[in-house]
Amino acid sequence: METQKFSYDNSIVRAFLYATVAFGIIGFLFGLTAALMLFYPELPEFFFGTDDTTIKSLASGNIQGLINTQGAFGFGRIRMLHTTTVIFAFVCNSVFVGVYYSLQRLLKTRMYSDTLSWIHFWTWQIMIIAAYITFFMGINTSKEYAEHEWPIDILIAFSWIVFGANMFLTIAKRRVRHLYVAIWFFIGTWIAVAMLHIFNNLEVPLSFTGWKSYSAYAGVKDAIVQWWYGHNAVAFILTTPVLGLMYYFLPKAADRPVFSYKLSIIHFWSLIFVYIWAGPHHLQYTALPAWAQAVGTGFSIMLIAPSWGGMLNGLLTLRGAWDKVRENPIL
Image 1: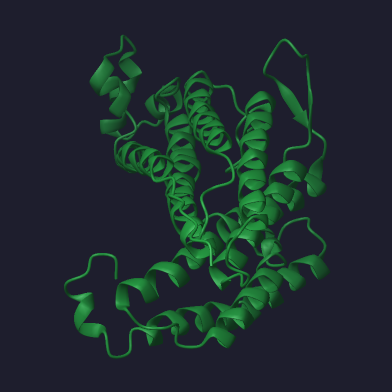
Image 2 (image 1 turned 180 degrees about the horizontal axis):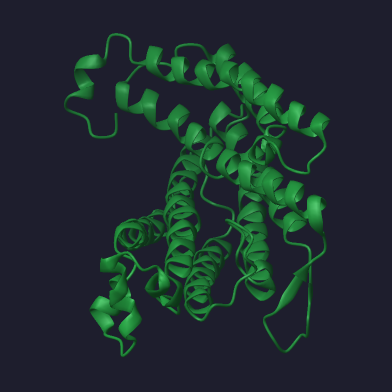
C-alpha cells in the first residue's frame, strides 16, 4: 500500500482566528457604546464636544437634544456597526476558523486551493472595512442585518462563492468516503446563506458611479423578503454552522462519541426544513396576510423539537465526561 503524505493548511485557520479576536473586541465595544447611548444619548458630544447648547437640555427632560444628536457617531450608525461587526466580522470569521480547521481533518485532505482560501480571507476582511467606512458616512440600505449597499453586497457574494467553491472542491477530493454530519451543516449553511443574501439584496443602483440603490421589492413584499432573510441569517449564520462545529469539537473535547448519530441526522434535516419557514413571526400584527403570519407562528412552535433535539444530543454526549467541563475551556 502506498503511503501518502500531506499537510493541513493551518495558516488560514490562524488568520481567521486573529480576525475573529480583533473584530470580537471591536463588536463588543460597539455594542457597549450603543447600550450606553440608550441611557446617555449625548455620549458622542460628551467625548467630541459640540457648540449646540440644546444637546445639554436632556438633563432637564427636554428631548430636543436627542433629536439633534446624530451624525457619524449617532445611535443609528453605531447600532448598525455593532450588529454587522458581530454577525459578519466576529461570528462569520469564527465559523470560517472552525470550518477550515475541521473540514480538512474530517476529510483527511488539505483544502483544495490555498489561493482560494486567501482570496476568501482578504475579500471578507475588505468587505468589513468597506462596511465600516460607508456606515460611518451614512451610506446604507436601512434593511436590518443587510444594510450594505450594492457594491459591498456583490463583494459579499463573491467572497461567499469563493469559500463555497473551495469547500465543495475539497469535499470532491476527500480521502474519507463518509461525510460526517458536521459537514452536512456546513453545506446547508453555504447553500442557504447564498440564497438568502442574493434574493434579499436584489436592488437597482441609482447610478453605477454612486452608492445609492433601491430594493427590487416594495411594501409588504419587501418586508416579508427582508424577514425571511433576517430570521434565517440567525438560522444559517448564527445557528447551523455553530451546530456543525459542536458536532465536531464537542465529541473531540469530551473524548466521547456523539450520543446518537441517528438523532444528529434527524436534527439536521428537521432544523433546516422548519427554521426557514419561521421568518413571518417577525411581522405579527402587520399588513402581512394572516395566513403567512399563522405559518410563521406554526413553524416557530414546531422549531422547539429540532432545537431541543440538537441541544440534548450535545448534552448527552457529555455523559460520563462532566468532570472535564470544569477543566476544558472548549467544553
